[in-house]
Length: 94
Image (tube, rainbow, N blue to C red; front, side):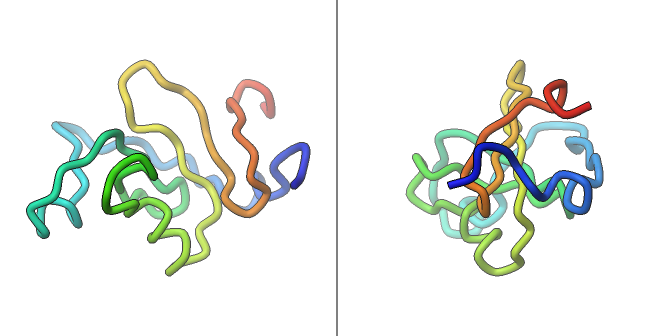
């Protein structure tokens, strides 16, 4: 496991959260509920966290290899790199 994310420069496109209420579309389509939401920093996909039954944020990473997600929860400003298995805040790398 890496001490720091090695994918920041080529993975984060600084996608911003879409306006309005966020939801995990995969969960909505399957009639499931979610615990917390995560957003892919490469393409903006919003999916549910691993504490949710669907684990759609992780499934998105597995199908796309987009390595970094950010919390889509209000007041949370952290990121997770699936490849390096490390969490970080952007102010740590700017």
